[in-house]
Length: 298
Image 1 (cartoon, rainbow, N blue to C red):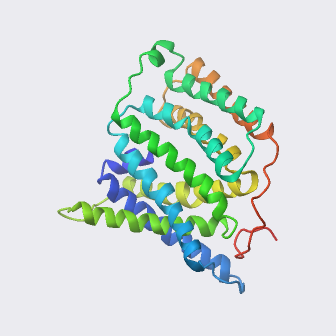
Image 2: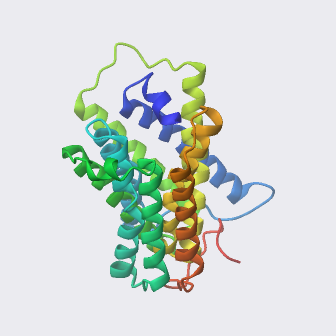
């Protein structure tokens, strides 16, 4: 809802630049406070060597830049139903990439959880109408939404490797920095000229701040905390809970009516997440993590 409100007041890429500029500043202030605040004398997590720079750049490229470019472009060509169906496959993509890239074993309980959760998402977005699912038509925008899903999967899996050298907070801060720099470059190359700087209303700024501080600063850092502890594949199971929270918030804030197929679908999603995470074995770390003093295990 915050994204829909903000793009009403400015072009999507301008919204993205504003969002990630704010989140970058907030993340690095928080990172500095966690390093030096309250008489701490830690070392600021500065990347060393071209390898670490490229690793952090890859997070900004996939999870911030590509994810938003594919999503903001694709959503203009496809329907909300198609987008939700394609994004519901993100946990499966993440698990497959984790298995191939990180050698994380896919447990039978995870497979069952994926399937149950996917069925639940279909039930929620179709409101239990089989006809709506069967008559779904696909278009070129769906290819871009598939890119959105794949970008997030790579962001999660790649992040698991980066978290061996950086904390979730550090990784998110640098990803946001590289992401906003690439958006600025895109706007310059695209020749987007505005007659005047965008003037967000009070609600527009509240939407931007929600996206910056809650979705990026809090949400992404916590996401990487989960990836670090239980692995990218199992963490991805929680992705489909977005659909459940969306219908609940729509009912609470917008007064939309909840139908029993949606409630049943939400139960399927929650059951799938539980089965896929609790039912699977813990995923061991790829290697012993290095410490940058921020969010690492003592």
